[in-house]
Length: 232
Length: 77
Image (cartoon, rainbow over all chains, first blue to last red; front, side, top):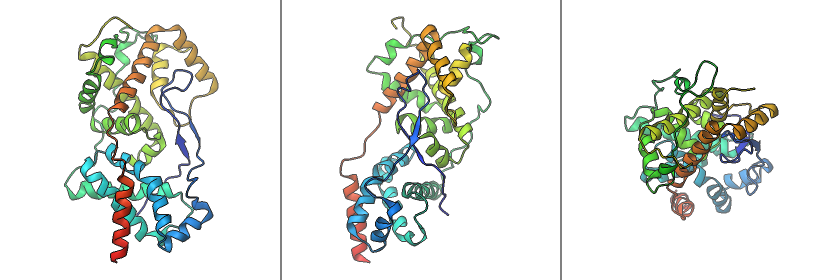
């Protein structure tokens, strides 16, 4: 069964919310400008096996589907086949797609099932719950009045070195699996938080907490690596 | 007035409803005045930026390859 998440927003950017927050803003998404499923014309053309219609859908959605697959831990050599299979299933189940859901949502639902099947076929576990649930990594850094006891160390030397990427990847591997997954989807693959929640089948609140933990734990790992300096 | 601990929690956790205007103003003001919190936020943004730069991009003809396979299969069936 294909899930049908009710998401109608798209992420803008992580980098600058204008007030220093890391959180992203969401804007209503006037999605699918090129393939307007609402008109039904695209759907009709797809059902008639019109190659141009199929090309429009493939060109509009392949890159995002591929990035999600990679973000979900599918090796690059298998991700292309998986995305191909998503479109194949989409074409085979077109009659069930009434056009009420967004095409993107429908495709992502198929992808989610494909990833599940992929893991199952290879005897891989789904990404398990983190073992540090409830642990507040930052709590020991503050006093009872919420003031810094142990302020963040300067990471200027590391973050401006050529080894920064390698150090981050190394620390990323040490994160609990679900935090690692969510960091990859959010910060590396640049996906919308709500779409991540749907993919991982967790609540938006839980998703926010996991992102919070992943960001701080990764930073903490870099700090503990000893690359601190005093230039920033 | 929010504490540093509250500010760190607010800027790193993605609230499903987003922050209120007052909270956003409060965060912005705090970060202008607090060197420790602003350093942390700056570092987290930098870590995110570097992480994204390590992303492996798919090959430029990925879409065309997938399309070719789909159309080829369609013709065979």
